[in-house]
Image (cartoon, rainbow, N blue to C red; front, side, top):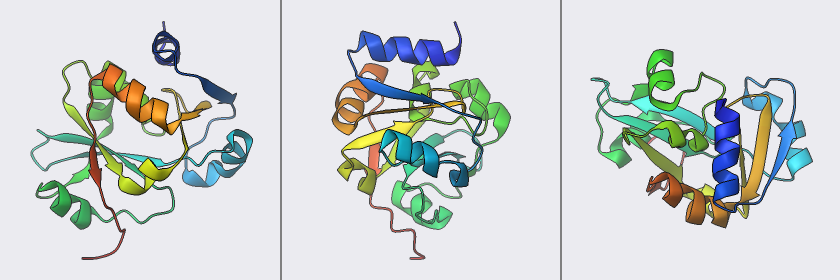
Length: 168
């Protein structure tokens, strides 16, 4: 069973309703507006980060058009020198490749090595949309279901940060 099938099965098992849109592969945020319109839901960016020693790993959900400032997020997490995690670490921890990073892939983080970090602004959205392990589909669901049902089922408690996107 492929990653997308496993993710969709988990959502069905949790009783989470969602809308699935299949589309051509997307690689950047610039590819997403037609999908956001189809799903009537904004899509956040997902950034895979790690500390310099590559011993602490983070998956950051941030508002799509908000600037990401490494120093701001590092300071708020209390982690020196955050940087982008490499492709091999991403695949070994979450089973996805760049362009497919999404919080639903925490399903494959059985050792709970990746800490989910959420931009507080996303917590105000009524719905959330993300790839289900592939960049040729996007699914949208009620934000309450994602934060209240899906994440607890994945046994991942997010850290919620007030991210301004400005230099501090």
